[in-house]
Length: 156
Length: 158
Image (cartoon, rainbow over all chains, first blue to last red; front, side, top):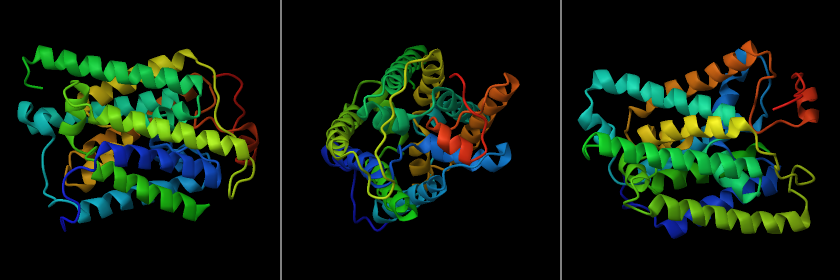
């Protein structure tokens, strides 16, 4: 919004800095940085268990950090969903996106983590389950993207 | 404890957003193998985290939480099944649980729809586990001591 940060951070800054976040959370409080776990903690009261207390703080801080970057970054405008909202009408897009969310939630709980928990933290710790989960979801994501691209004649 | 999670969460959310991971195009072009950005970012993050954790392992201690214990879990079928379903959502939606927050913060309000679905999917998996009379999975796999302290049922198998 303030346009202090213009454009995208180079990968060689963003990547290593994210890696340091993983190290910091382990080094400070012995915790695995994971966003799906933080979302899962919000369901704990409904399911009747007690989550680790740092998770709610982490989720709120994550949202805060996103807002700070949005405020400092290029002008924010309400926008659609990339090429997906050009191809699909809102009536079709909403159920598709709900299903996308369900797949992300169901899959991450089943596998015990997502892009951050397994993909970065678990892989960096050398945990075999994380390596398998990450290899699986990246392969399926690339294949389904390439498949959709071919099926839609390059529209997606 | 709280301040650590607050600081790391703020920086992490900032980085996800400033690197454009909340944009459909950034992820979509990456998954189409047209733009290496997300893979370079992911690989450099893993490399730095790997090196940093190697250093932490040597000291073996954490600042506020005593002895360091890094995860090491064996591979089970659920990692492939869960990973595949997650990958399908990742591929079609070009987003993940963290990136969706960045998307919503930068005006991609359809991200809210994905978040509703995400909570629904997490809940649904819990229902299925309960239906199978299995202990509810939390993340990461909570230690026996923590489970006992929180009054959660013990995990016997994956």
